[in-house]
Length: 407
Image 1 (cartoon, rainbow, N blue to C red):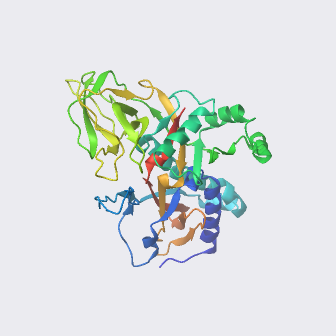
Image 2: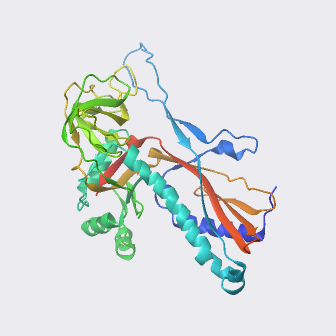
Image 3: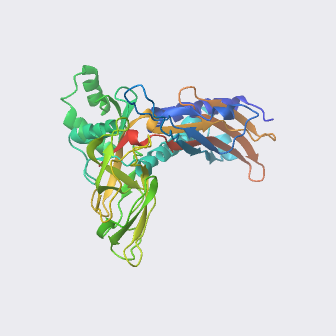
């Protein structure tokens, strides 16, 4: 059993303070998973299974149809991340006082780990979110791309009130803040724009800037991609042809496309929204020597009215054309509008090493982040070894409740 020392306790407090101040995206998502790890006798493994609420449809009359109900679950895998440094005995004696530790060592460590947490979450936008608004490669300069993003997410069942956020990169923030400066009714929000360069609250969403918004370079594409044969409901891949033959990375994870005459449906009424369903490529894919390619996609295609998971009005037809968002090889940033339940973040306690290592474990009650600060010694080189560890994992819970705002 490790001991808790005043030095590591103070460092853990400082770490959490700086960590929280440097989180952006992570602040606005659903947290609290992994409660079972709080029990000392529970070790359920590194993967958490998170059930998604079942979906139902209403029927008229006294007769019940009792359709099959499919309950989905999402896997969230916990990983370990750390930062470390090793001041020498000479540095401790001549250069580093306790007052300097926070700014010189603890704060940079906290920023590095907080950035890693946010980056991992924002990377999900690229690979899990199919909904897309705006023009790749062009920073949105009007309100339309953002309001369209909200409309698309609402069409896919996102709750209309509360818990919605928009996270954008610095260029998008500067552009839209200037464009929208006269359209806010709240004087406090106008004041915030000028003092802080941020937008505050608009279209039912909290707006924030994050330098870690993901970017994506689209695939080379080429040819005239078409559906090749029939696709069954429940498909997570589609077979296509018509590509330029034998080319690597013909499409890349994060590319978004639509299929002719495959329209999205309202998740409750199952009526067509009148908007083509968007799909995202989930892994880089190359074409073969005949120009064929089997594309891994999300979301899964459900067309049958017998399942509550139906998300399209029809299965793709043979030779239906694929149309991709944006031009080939374009670099785009993925600003994002999302409901808090679109993404989940799990943080679990770090178990101290023990064996004489000085350690303190501390949890922030607001973010749920648990950190472990450990101090050891390298006697051979006369160095103090200091490390900060966190255990966390991300999952896209309801990615249809999010929409990329291309920039």
